[in-house]
Image (cartoon, rainbow, N blue to C red; front, side, top):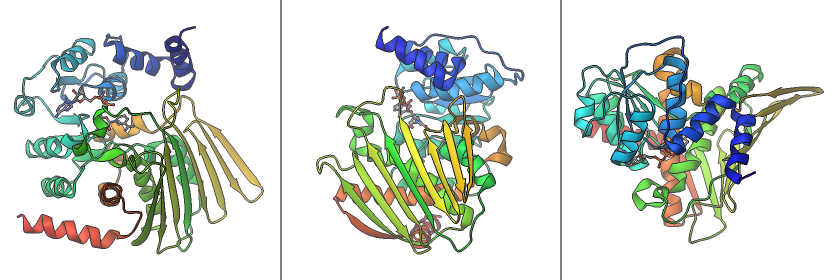
Length: 377
Ligand SMILES: NC(=O)c1ccc[n+]([C@@H]2O[C@H](COP(=O)([O-])OP(=O)(O)OC[C@H]3O[C@@H](n4cnc5c(N)ncnc54)[C@H](O)[C@@H]3O)[C@@H](O)[C@H]2O)c1
């Protein structure tokens, strides 16, 4: 059996047939029939027509609402036209301005390169649209300030693509775990990530390093988990990398907080994980110990009690994250995403400066950007 066929069979076992077909169709750029009970009029615009837009956003929109994507835009016309053809998207505007001034649009999904997310989100908010912006929401503090300024008065209209908090495993853990208001959390994430060649666009200097490209997911998960109890303020951050020429890869980050929390994330990519990114997450809080194995299995221990759950298809939280604009009651608190972005940007600076130790304060960082938001009125 060829490696491609073997991967496809493995994907069916992990993600189910429908999602696996969409993943393959995204690579081949072919259309697939979908079945959805609800079929609202097309009112969604898509910016960025790459693999995530096709196989993940496209899959969950199509399987929920049918052909609801009205228009798509990409700087690469081949990506734009092939997604439009395969997913029966009627409109392929030649410019971002043409896309955003289409009066039929209500919602914009942004899944382009990282450096473009914040500015596209600002334009879409200014056009009065609701916005789903993939991670990271910004790759610089200036971008974050511009975005937050545009968000004023747009409360409840912007949603971020950080999906791990929406996973079945994290939501189940949250629903059964007693939270100790004085207790610290220990959270450890081990990530086998994709190998990215030197020419991959994530590597371009303006795209924010793999800290913005990948590690932001687990910093955001940490912030989400800590918010269950109440956020700490001050943190000590320590970085270790295996290769000083590539400090954003094969890197470990350790964070301790003024509320007794201990967090580690290790990103390793020395080999390519055949089934895609693989994550092991361990947590301890109060009397609870929990292990999430690749968002497919969850084990929770409390004293002598053990609970085991299996999630099939694997659920990293994409469905609920992507459907946030249409299920607003389930949407993430935007402020959590702002805080995790501030921490991510600080760690990005550390990696760039080869700085191994730093202190960080959420309240100071938040107050600093708030001053910039106000100053630019
Ligand atoms: N939440 C998740 O789990 C998850 C997983 C994978 C990717 N993503 C995100 O999805 C986005 C796309 O990633 P991908 O894997 O599909 O990458 P990709 O390279 O397959 O697609 C990116 C697309 O964006 C287009 N593009 C580049 N610059 C553009 C610009 N300025 N304006 C419009 N289009 C532009 C490219 O031509 C390409 O078609 C990224 O933000 C990535 O971080 C999220």
